[in-house]
Structure formats: structure tokens, C-alpha cells
Length: 390
Image 1 (tube, helix red, strand yellow):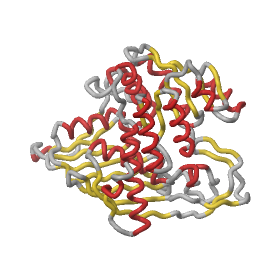
Image 2: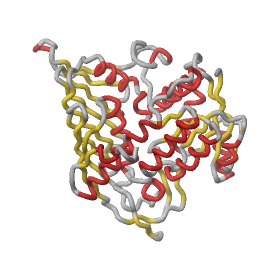
Image 3: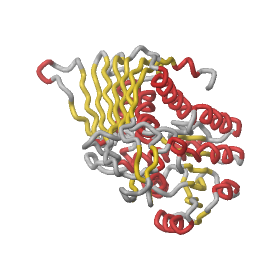
């Protein structure tokens, strides 16, 4: 296929990120199949029309069911709230449409498995939105590990720290309601770290965790979009039904040890998505707030120059960078989505599986639920307990 007609459900934070990626792809990756922005979908007709015009979509639909039925749509992009993912994805698969779905894949493991089975039965391409994999510095980390350059992996420690709901008068947005979001920092932030751990180190064997909701009630919002909201601090209050912070320890199948922390209550941290991996021959460190850099240490360096070195992953030798700017000219958050869409378009054009796909979404959901079970039952939980569910 030389082009892929896209219909997108959602038009706020992730809708803007995805739209930008579709628009940028043909300019910077002209060899890829071209995404054609056919239709954008949302419930608020006025707001939707504003997004359609701003983002550059050809048309708009206020009912996702009508979008899925359209014969001129090849790919359904789902970035609506998490509670809508399953129903839209099942309908899209039944209609033979390829699917790009934001994470977490669904509210539960069983729903995620149902989505995966439907996609596989339909023979469509499917991708889940773990965009941080596509930072060139993360791709370099993957390369160093795959080539054995930091040796046998001993430790993975990852953390995703934010502070955007630190103020107890911040309104009760949908991300703080379990029936819509599925979980709080655990599924929203922790899912990204879990995926990076799986991608770089391998599968989880067992986990043990703890969580806390620091602010139990919040004022109801009068308006919200993305990670922002408006509301009166004296407005009626509603219960926060998700975690504000979740931490867990893990063992991986290859014997490595892991620790993962996700919180929205880390004052001063706007978007600290970071990891450190220690191996027998060296270590690597990454922090999304310095997205172009990978810190690398090799034990075989001469004694007098040993230490972490800063590698600026902007040379043409680094993944995707030959499509962008001269060496040293950095890229940012939005570029990870462009790289993600590039991989999806290529998978469709070449008739091969996309990566990461719903298999990865299911695996991530299994870890999320294993941690939840561990917290509820105050014990180590093996991922083998979820094999039958998968």
C-alpha cells in the first residue's frame, strides 16, 4: 500500500500527538506508506470541528460506529479514554480495519485478551501506543543490550514521576476515576515503564507491590482537556478511585531484579520517565526529560577515564535520526510518535506484524494486574498465575 486512510477516535492530548505524527511522516519519511487523515471522531460537535480544522483532518464524525463503517477507512486510531478502547477495537476488527490503540490496551486483562484474539482472527495489523520505545536513545539502549555490550543484565530500575495533581484542589478528571481510566499512576505511567522493561530486559517472572491514594476526594471539574482541567475548589466533591502512586519489586525470567515506581505526587517532576540498567560489563541510564541523551558506562574502559559518558543520540547512525536534522540538532516528544507511526505504516505496507502490538499490550496488562493482586493480597505474585487468562 502506498497510502493508508486513517480514521481517529479522540481529539485532545493524544489526538493532537497522533495528528502531528501523521502530518509529519510524509515530509521526513517519504519512503513510508502515506497516512491520509480522512476523518476524526468525537462527541462534542463544536469542539470536534475546531480540532478537525486545526489538526488537518478531511472530515468529522460524532459517532465512532459510523466511522468504523466507512469504506474509505483502512486504519482506526483509538486514543479516546481507556473505557472506550475495547468496544471500538472489537468493532474495528470485525470491520477488517487495522487498529492503532493507545495504552493501556483496556481496563482489564480479560478485555485486552479479547481485543488481541479479535485482531488476530480478523488478520489485521494492530499496534499499541508505547511511544517511548521510539526515542533514538532508547533504541540505542536496546542495541547495546542486544549486542551484549553491557553483558549479563542484573538490575532494571525504572521510575515515572509527575506532579500535576499535587494540589488537592485540582479537579476530579477522568484519569482519576477507575471506571473510566482503569487505574491511576500504575496503568497510566507505570505501563510505560513496564513496557520499557519488557522491551529492554525481558519478561517478568514475579512481582510484589504497594500503592497509595494520597488525596481521597477532589472537586468535580467544570471543563477538562488532556492533563488540564478547570473547577471551583468549593464545587461538590467526588471520590478518587485510583492510585496516586504505585511501587513494586520484580524478578525477570532471565534472573535480573527490578524496581518500578509510578507517581503523580513527586513535586518538581513534570515528566521524569527514566530507567537505569546494570549489567556485568556496564550500565546505561535514560531520562525522558533529557530525551536525546543516553548515559553509558563500560567496565573495560581504562581506569583513569572510567565513568558514565553522555552519548547524544542524534547522529545518522542512531535510529531514525537520518530522517531529521544534522548531528547535534535535537528532537523531542512529538518525534517518538512520528517514529511509532512510521513503524505502523511500514508494517501495513509490508504485510508484517507491527511492534509493539496487542501481544505487548496484553503482556503489560498482565503485569499491571499481577501488581494489583500482590497489593490486595500482600504477597509475591507470579505471572504464571495469569497464563490461563492469556
